[in-house]
Image (tube, rainbow, N blue to C red):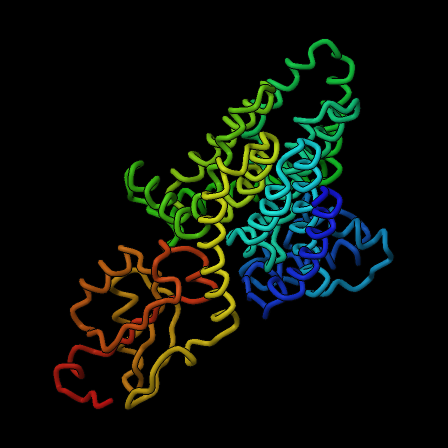
Length: 456
């Protein structure tokens, strides 16, 4: 089979994948309203000042701060360029899906250029699209699939020897930083890139200037609303410094946090993310530096007290690109790819099964109704939730976090009636629990439990 035929097969497969795998019920991410409202507001106001307090957001998001500005500005700019006045959930969802498909095509092109085996040309983009974290990001209109694609193009620019590659690197890095300030951690690889191109000082200087100007263009709050830009950074520092149960181990040791992250990566996509290390096999020192920076980023986000898997998701895009750049023989990587794909497909099946379902559809019938309450992580909150509703059993969500079980075991006034595990019971606490399918602990007062009133 020729490479051209293989590429056509991949293109057809991508369309089928979009139609049957990615097109599912709304995934219900709580941040959807931010993107939908801010992008619509930018179009209505015909400017790119992105502080959230200016838009018709719910009170719990209506802050004088700016976050994800680059993502919101680019989306609004694209829609305005095409004359779109009304932003819809469908269009934002489609963007997230198309970002993934675009990168799958980029992988195929790069593999063909590297003269990789045809099985890798077809198989790697498929496994990437089946990566459970990438799949989740494609269901949300949050920045992750956007920054994943931009980051991948940034990495490709570092690898490319095209005369304009440095400009591509500058623009994509600026978009990333304007969207999430944490992408500054990839500054070291830019220093290596600049040193590797030290013979062309004028081009590197022009690229640096272009990068700075692009950051200011896409995040204009830095220039015109610096207080709100600063507030956004402070809010993130507070969130990640103060804990965000049930996500992560704020009191855990470095080793415990690393195991937590490794556990998630293992059960979500079979350690696909560690393909990032394969960049060390490339002869280009810039690719080697990029591979090292990817591994440092994995370590950094894995050791934070608050663990949001979405902070690492773009690294899966970089990992896929490292494999494509090295174009290793299939016998080296196919077993790993097959294992990664198998794990991800199990998770995608579970995701399909629970997406959009209500708690009542997964909990048995008892002798009196169950009332569901919000997450609780201390004894007082748990006791209050149960004692306030004597005519109901209380359904309390759990992601299996030790903080929750410790609080529950220390709440003497309540008793466990039943426990319905999450479809994702084998995951450490993560967003698949909090947004989609938590475990449910059915509780009642200790007094009623001891009186033997239960009769289901």
